[in-house]
Image 1 (spheres, helix red, strand yellow):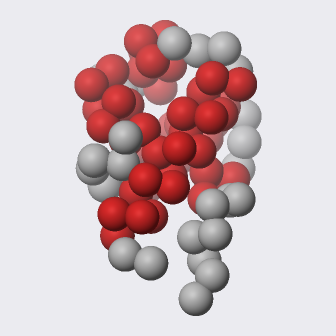
Image 2 (cartoon, rainbow, N blue to C red; image 1 turned 90 degrees about the vertical axis):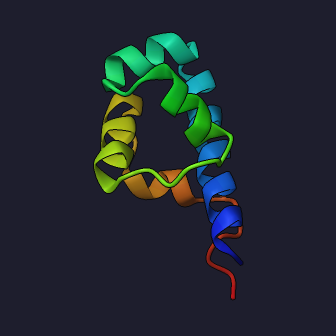
Amino acid sequence: MDEICYRKSLGLNVREHRKRNLYTQSEFAKVCDIPREQIGRIERGEINTSVGNIFKIAIVLKIEPMDLFKNRDMFKF
C-alpha cells in the first residue's frame, strides 16, 4: 500500500467518526483547533498530518488514535 492509500484511509475514518459525532467540518475544526481547510484536506487524503493533529482529532472524537487507522485494510501486507 502506498502513502496515498494510507492518507485516504485515515481521511475516510476521520470523516466517518466526525459525522457519527454530528460535527460539521467547521465545528470540528474549531474544537480541534485545526483550520477547517486543513480538516478538509485531511479527510480527502490530500495531506500528511502531524501526530499532534491525529491526537487532537482522536481526543475530540473520544477515541484512541489507532481507531483512525482501523477497518481500512491499511496494515495488510
